[in-house]
Amino acid sequence: MLTIKNSLSILAIGAVVASSLALFISSTKKQESALPPARPNIIFIFSDDHTAQAISAYGSKLTKTPNIDRIAKEGAILHTNVVTNSICGPSRATLLTGKYSHLNGYKLNEKVFDVNQPVFPEELQKNGYQTAWVGKMHLGSLPNGFDYLNVLPGQGHYYNPDFINSKNETVRYPGYVTNVVTKLSIDWLNQRDTSKPFFLVVGHKATHREWLPDAPDLGAYDNVNFPLPPTFYDEYTGREAAKDQDMTIDKTMRLKEDLKVHADYEKSGIFNRFTPEQKKPFYDYYENKISKEFDAKKLTGKALVEWKYQRYIKDYLSTACSLDRNIGELLDHLDKSGLAKNTVVIYASDQGFYMGEHGWFDKRFIYEESLKTPFVIRYPGVIKPGTQINELISNIDWAPTLLNLTGTAIPKGVQGESFLPLLAGKKVPWRKEAYYHYYEYPQPHHVYPHFGIRTGRYTLARFYEVKDFWELYDLKNDPQEMHNLYGSKGYETITADLKAKLKKEIIHYKDDEALKIMESKL
Image 1 (tube, helix red, strand yellow):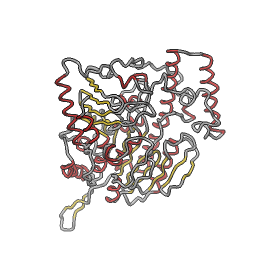
Image 2 (cartoon, helix red, strand yellow):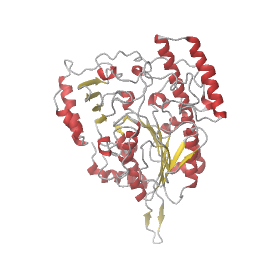
Image 3 (spheres, one colour):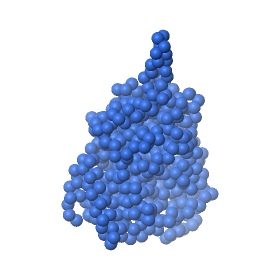
Image 4 (tube, helix red, strand yellow):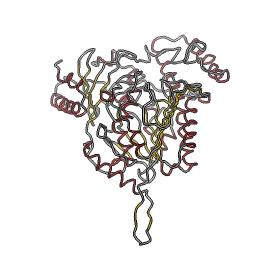
């Protein structure tokens, strides 16, 4: 595995890659000298809760995402990109710091990110970059390292959203949030200091709960009947944490707020932000069509649960329609402006999400659907189109990779590693295990705190605090993680080996809390 100590060698690889884009001149003495390596611009498009199961580049049968797919086809797709803590705010804190939650201090949602700690955009600024973040940030503070900020407060709103700028001023923008974020991002691109390379985060609210589509996308999937996931009626046998959560479509998903059945358009902060013009198509669709349909059916039991599932998937995917369309608009702008040639474009989400697997929505668990998150990247002339990356990449690796791409030194405190060599087609040693630690309990979804590792074949997890127990899954023979093998005969050697690897990872990443729990007897 690569280490922080050899970051200089990684940086050297990045310099070689970057130098391929540099211009060369000849002196009057017929001696050639290279100009400084070209520094690419970077646009990091960062969505919320948009899972790989809803992206056609990842093989989704639910929908088509042509613009996200375009980035993958013209660059690289990461097939095993995992997160360190599957929840929104902590994922963003990891992006900024390249560190685990226990070191960056942001373990839970709805807290305040410590702005006094180093963040990687500060290093970009030192290297002459202009930096900006537009849209959803969700960190409870305005971190350093950005020349321009215009971000949603908290979760933000889908319609007529408020934004907070670098001066801590709050301004309301008319329109649908995904469209507004794209417009503000393009406006910044047009008004930036063109003498400097730039780093821009385009932070989208979509596809976060409560999944409000843009007006043109209302009913986009009404003619589709989506098949139930094979694990939809999971009984959670032998899996206590999975059984004791509060994130099922059946019991947790709300008819009024989540599925818009007789929604409160007067008092609810979710639905009372519409202008009369915006409200009309929304109200007509959900009140005069969906709610009337629901009332007429008088559903109970499995029929009700499956109706809720259909409505959830349709709203989620309809909300994603605008997301993909706006990504296309941004890509078109790069083409028209000439920026595309020297701009790295990344699309990623903060973590995975459940599309009805195990009967769930939301995220949090170390299990595959929430652990893995989409990541596609395009860099013309450097990343070969159609590149497939199967190594275990973690979101602690994002920051050092972005620094490496720009020829910027990687600070010693960063815990991740640059995977630029992998993107450039190099054969280099790489991690065989990825470490994970989730904390938030009991609200809002009653998922037990746990830590563990994901290897190429196995997932081992230790649940603690509420109840102490282990889980072990063989992803090759049980990819849907239905059978907890911990304690099963014949797995003693595998379990002992995985525990040793887990402890090594805990020590390596300096997670003292997990080490103490790891060494305690059950």
